[in-house]
Image 1 (tube, one colour):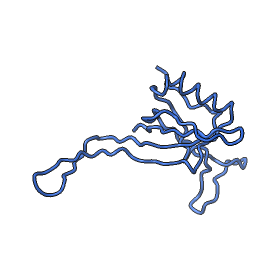
Image 2 (cartoon, rainbow, N blue to C red; image 1 turned 90 degrees about the horizontal axis):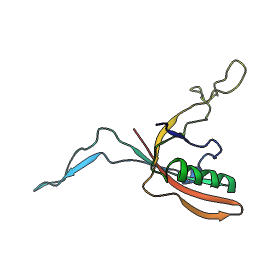
Image 3 (cartoon, helix red, strand yellow; image 1 turned 90 degrees about the vertical axis):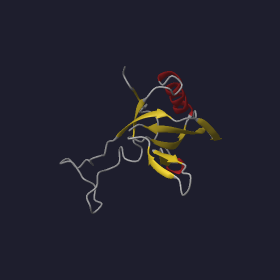
Image 4 (cartoon, rainbow, N blue to C red; image 1 turned 120 degrees about the vertical axis):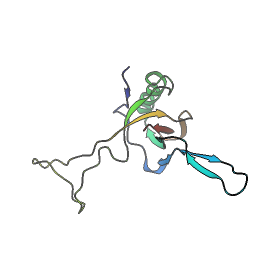
Length: 141
């Protein structure tokens, strides 16, 4: 089975809607006396990342089709560029961009293997001709 790929026509998520939280891999045991004991439950931990995108009508249709048809309403995994890393320039320790011999900046690439989060995407307030869409992805280990 081929894993779906995030549509390149969609914009980067907004920084204002970004939240990232690791899944809790601990198991709590209640003791007869004293504090709760914690032990490890999982050996690998996924992360839940909440994203918001501002989409025009065409981009919203692309997103809706991707979730509904390509991902079977969010039930299939997909590859997505890491919005916090992918496409950003590589820098020296002094903060100077690294360049090719032709003077083109070198860009970082990083992909996530994801599934849609527990909730389906939520369409927020319409601002003129743009739609705010909030959703979560589970980044698989």
